[in-house]
Length: 492
Ligand code: SAM
Ligand code: SF4
Figure 1 (tube, rainbow, N blue to C red):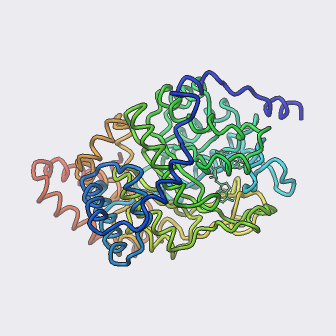
Figure 2: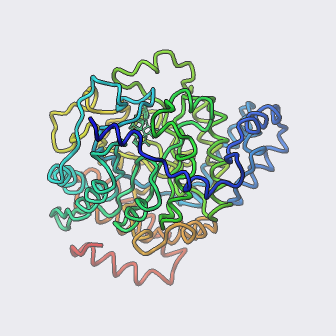
Figure 3: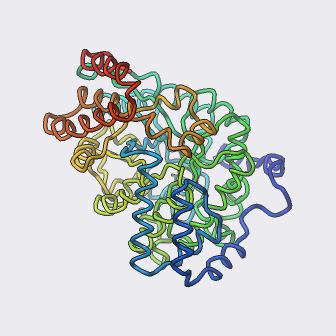
């Protein structure tokens, strides 16, 4: 259509790229990252242990240090790295996991990423954009039936889901309130996964109250990026994407979600790319990423790119990538999505994952319409690997002593960007949030849990309360007062 064509040629705001460039080169130096991998082969154990100690002190690693970790093959050292990754997670985030759900709002897209089912050339996909009524219905299921408090909304890049639509859809989600047993189901934090935007549009997202703004670079490797994202599409501009978090910061959004799609280029290169991106954000705006994502490429309907892909990341390599990322950026949140199987997610969780999705449905409109089949529907982007419900995931986590936190207070009290980053680095956030984690978990259990989940969770809650009594005696009185009020039906 005419509208699509003009959108395709939409001017990238070149001034908004140049403003952030320090020279005529961007901050990803492919040759330097590749050299670092080669130059740090066969690291000795003493050096690896020194690097691990630096991570345990919650310091961001440099490229050579991360490259050395990527080159470790000695099983004993790998075990030490994994143990340290788990320790860092507990030090920074305590024994908590945050859960969320993806909400796909539109699968129209003007781009042609060769790996994605939503690409413009894919004529076999059923295109849909949800109306505000449909978004309301999806949200009612998510917060009223399932009990989610956090969403990540996902949009293709297209005039039908332009900034006006984004703002209206997010507002609609925040407006939904559904009675839930003793309380009210509401979405408290909407994170956004969308195309890179200009500063003006990002200001509007900030004004509507988004949580994290998430854009994955897909691949940091310039030549691979150019091969997979045709130059005549908006996404073909590597730098427009690379500098979008700089623009977000200028627009007031300071929770950045970065990521790479693993399976497009060498996985070691992508780990270093994510680290180089972190360094640049720390340098340029003083805040590293709030979260890092590392989705692995999944088969997408009518998307032949995958069939010749030899870059699929094997389980052992993926495990190492997650471990090294945890060690390299110790303060960041790490997201492992339901693209992965339940088995893989169980295995990787102890390496420092902080967020997982559950009860996920990625067909557009699939939450309110059970007829949309989660495994093979033709309006979804790819096929999910873990179809467990939120309740199942929570029960399993509780059985292992992990608490599921539904707290969104940090963001609502202005603890974002640098403020949250400083608390995380100092290890204070872990303790501070324990109280809110227990209170919000109690709420969820009372409002949504089946009796067997509630009883699986009880020992965790009791253990957490004991720890609060021991570690934060000054807070016990206030905590107990809130706990009693929740039991009486009051809600956050
Ligand atoms: N259109 C926006 C963009 O490209 O940034 C946001 C939505 S896009 C659906 C969200 C993410 O899905 C992409 O950034 C990409 O990493 C991921 N993705 C695309 N195709 C995929 C596939 N076949 N398997 C796994 N993840 C995929
Ligand atoms: Fe469009 Fe994003 Fe899919 Fe690329 S990855 S085709 S931009 S939805």
